[in-house]
Length: 277
Image 1 (cartoon, rainbow, N blue to C red):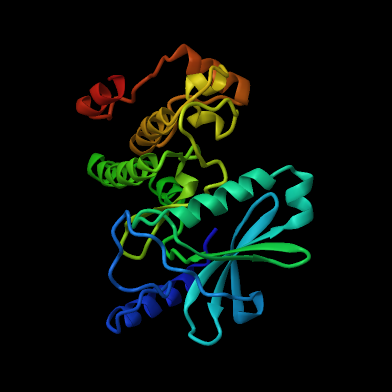
Image 2 (cartoon, helix red, strand yellow):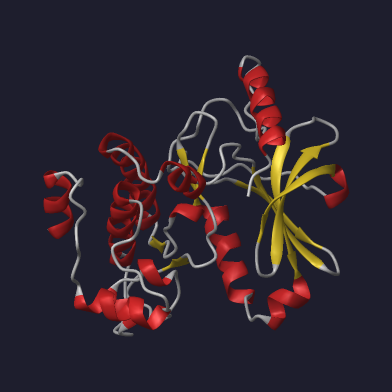
C-alpha cells in the first residue's frame, strides 16, 4: 500500500526538480530511447538513505520509501531477507528480477539503480513511483471507462512489446504490478517471474486468474502468455472483475480450460469482438 502524505510530498519535490532538469529518481529529465543502455549505477550503501515509510510488503521482503541524505532524492528500496529467500527457494526469482531490470530501459518499466547486500538482507534500489498501484484505483472506481482502459492497455502493449523484443517474458501481469507515475502513465514492476526465453519453458508460475491454458496444462509456454494475461487484464479493467474466478485455484483453472466467458451487458460490443479474436 502507498503512504499518501509522503507520496504527495515526493511528487511535489518532483515538480520542483522538473524545472531544474531532474526527475524524482535522479535520472536526466529526457528519457533515453527504449534501446539505450542503462548508465553505470553509482555505488550506494543502505546507510546513505533515510527511511520514510514502508510502501509495500511481501512474503520475504518489503519496499520502503527512502530519501538519499546528500541529495534528498526519493527512491523505492526493496529489502529482502536472505534467510527467507533461501527458505522459500526464491533465489532464482530474485536473480531473474535483478538480471532483467539491469538489461531493460523503457519509460513504462520501473528503473533499477543499484543492488547490494549485507549479512542479512538483499537490497534493490529502484525509482519511486508516487501514484501507487493501478489495483487501488480499479477497486475504488469499480471499473474503468472504455477510453481509460484503452489508454492503460496501449501503454502496457508498448512495455510488453519492448520486453519481447529482448526475448523476455514477463509472466506476472496484473493490476497489483502496474504502478502509476505522477502524470498517470504506467510502470510495470515486480519482475520476479520474468526471464529470458528463446523457445519454451514449463514452469508453473503467476497469478491463477491470469494463467494461460498452456501454463495450466504444463504443455510448455512462450511469450504469448503475456498477451493472454493482457486480455484478462483488459476484461477486468472494463468489468471490475476477471473473466475466470472461483473460490479456489483449481476451480479457476477448470474455468480457464473450459474457455466460457460471460460478458457484462455494459461492455462495448467492439471490446467483446476483440477479446473473442
